[in-house]
Image (cartoon, rainbow, N blue to C red; front, side, top):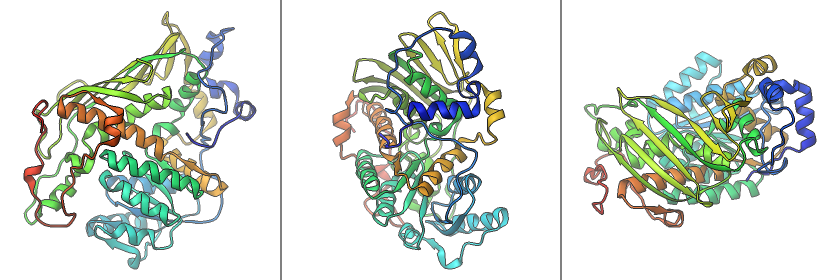
Amino acid sequence: MNDKKISRKDFLTYSAALGVSGILGTSLLSSCGGKKFVPLKQPGEYYVPELPDKAVAGKELKVGVVGCGGRGSGAVMDLLDAADGIRIVALGDTFRDRVDGLRNDIREKRGQEVPAENCFVGFDSYRKVIDSGIDMVILTTPPVFRPEHFKYATEKGVHSFLEKPVAVDPKGCRTVIATARQAKAKGLCVVTGTQRHHQRPYVEAFQKIQEGYIGEITGGNVYWNQGMLWYRERQAGWSDMEWMLRDWVNWKWLSGDHIVEQHVHNIDVFLWMSGLKPVKATAFGARHRRITGDQYDQFSVDFEFENGIHLHSMCRQIDGCSNNIGEYIQGTKGSWNSYNHEIKDLKGNVIWKFDEAAANAAFKQHNPYVLEHVDLVNHIRKGEVFEEAEECAISTLAGIMGREAAYSGATIGWDEISASQIDYSPVRLEMGKVDMSKYVVPVPGSGK
């Protein structure tokens, strides 16, 4: 859990400053009347982020980027929108074209020049970026590299933004959890790319659920069903390693498979809202139409939790099928869904709904990818210790447990996956030939 809490006094002061309807939603005021709710947690027992339009002013922060592809480029622009006094001073990636592309974008779109001597290429470029005298690092490589990069940044006393997921295997999750605790002990700030924790309607829904608006949680459904994601066909001159790195989102050793790389968002929402972690998973999955890599196209997972409740998790990346991205949580008194951002009682009456008009009147910035950086910079500049990495590692490990249950056909327990030594990585991390026979689509029940 995070150290930063919001007291009842602070919450009421904040509400008064913005207008009660802007925080709670007008439908709550008109439909709840004298209803009383039994809170799941008391104010002060859970973290509610401050989400101003922009971070507070303060000393200039020198920032490095490790992983200069699409997500790294997006994170840089989001950070520059989130705060003034940010200077991008170092870039690193496995490939020169990625570094050059982001360097040009920063120059052309933001008027900043990253020194040529601070542009690094290769598997060890993360060390050179972190050693270049930065205050904060953006870690947006394929997630297999995240644990080691985060560990090194923390050892060097650098604040971190970690894109989700934070690992692809249990060993990586264990490393991130241990490093997160070290970061906390060193007074560092760490935010992860689970941006729903900084998205206004999700944050308000989280508050309402903690205040007891749906009662005790009894189960839920989470989905990320969409069409096929991008892929890279192998080009002449690409070695095995280069092809996999450029096509990383389709290889389980690099991405963790899409249940971990993408669907972790939805799994994380349920774990965050409920405060629970799964004890076991039974699942199935399959591959029908994916063109490259060794991953599945679809997963369906039954997660059982500590108190016996169940979560159904479903994700799919297949063109021509029904799409569905969102979360639904059922409680003893009602339910919440992310599609309409509303809470209903057991009779179907809306008792709370996010008031978008009031939020638009109170704030200008609503992009959660920007607001997560607002939160990070605020903590750094205020000298407040904050870390999200351990929580994200638990959500990542839940996705891994579901993945391995589908791959194997076996029911996988939390203790078993937590201690697992699963490692799909190549023997040597270097450009060139790779033993591709290791990278096959898993067959459930085969023992392989």
